[in-house]
Length: 111
Length: 113
Image (tube, rainbow over all chains, first blue to last red; front, side):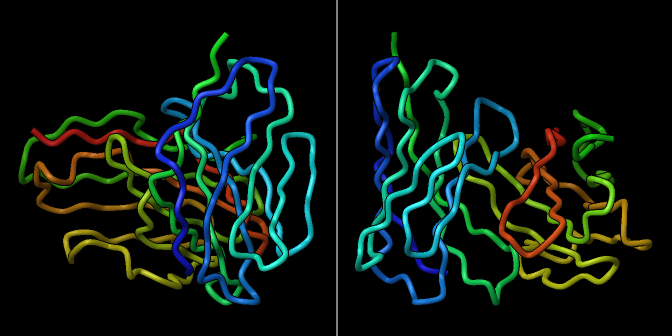
């Protein structure tokens, strides 16, 4: 799996959009970008994934650059409950669901 | 149950003892994954199963670690002759299909004294 690079931490004001960047410059054509988050000591939670088109669901939006070398996870209106570690993962389908987690970004949402 | 269930939630053991950690996946989920997570770090892949077949055990640290899923449902991760460095949160996840969306349990926290 391609490596990803994320900032170690970010702060965001409550109610504002949180934009979490991820670099994956060595991504291959068939590799997907996945985002998970982990709140406190809970298990990781799936958020969203995409291949090359932008994706949106009830939790977040995923913006992937045209060259696919980077992506941004957007939480449109961050709440205190969104404080968590956010993991950006690149996955190739031929490796099944074996996800390789990095250190992630600690997002702190502040009131 | 509605989610992935792991037991025990907390296990304290003495160095040299064997421990068995259990995972009961979401009903009907084909694939089951084991991860280990040290404090302040992301989850580290250990092994996974499709049905009862162990597909990949490349993440198991050494031969003291083993896992089984004999009937394609409940899985057990066994650590023999535990060492202090084995102390961590052990997490299980399951998934219905090959979509990359894993459902994680609450984990089993192992402390080796």
